[in-house]
Length: 350
Image (cartoon, rainbow, N blue to C red; front, side, top):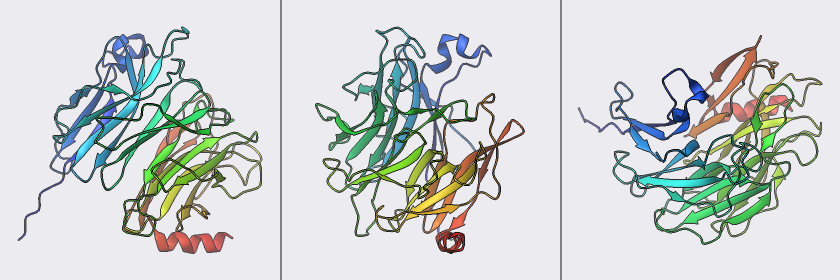
């Protein structure tokens, strides 16, 4: 029998205080921790600390891997003091990497040239998501002060642009008001096409915004490493003026197809909420919207709903993850969808 090495898996999380004091303890956001398993999740390492820099706070982390050399990259927001309204308090986007499978991480460096405030709102620098090209280029996007920014590195994170690129106006800011949701965001999500298809190297970006009063999911792409981008276009194909929110984006690297999941209220007059999946087989020129939830739910703003959806896709298998709320109780849901079944469902919903 052929024996194959089990690939390591990583869990990267913010460290939260275990004293039971929660936010009243200064240690509740003092670092990130990476845990690793090499046996499929049966056992996990004790964890390696990343970004510990007291008294500053660390939050909103997101990782990526360089498949050219297996380096790991992490971006996040560092707050001078989370939630402070002091005008001198800053939030900044940070970066660290590991070249030994997560066992040791580099000293964090500052990426963002424009600091935000510490309030955890539109003028705070947050939502940093890295994406890595097949040849090792690193791209990072985030939102701050009503703009979506990007930075990039061509040498594994050692050097970055002198000035961040301001890509788009983030209409309404990243902190979105959604009826029935305690807290919502439209932070940008970035992916890159590393497939062998015709759009290899293309960068894709989505975000939520409230340009027209309601909430929409916006999309743009770049074919030249982020120098130029297409005019932002709306992914949700309704004309209802209803809310679409909390998007996440992925790419099936075996096909180059794009998939995004989000919440949608196009069929309802109140806060009833469905879950939609939109897919594109032509580099985002067109998106097809498909409702994937079996029934709607009605959230309550008195209960914290959560901050994210998520989605993964590989070899034509799509796995979205979302939250729903029933009678004030939240639950996390997922499903496995074959691409051909998604296309079939789209044809029946037209």
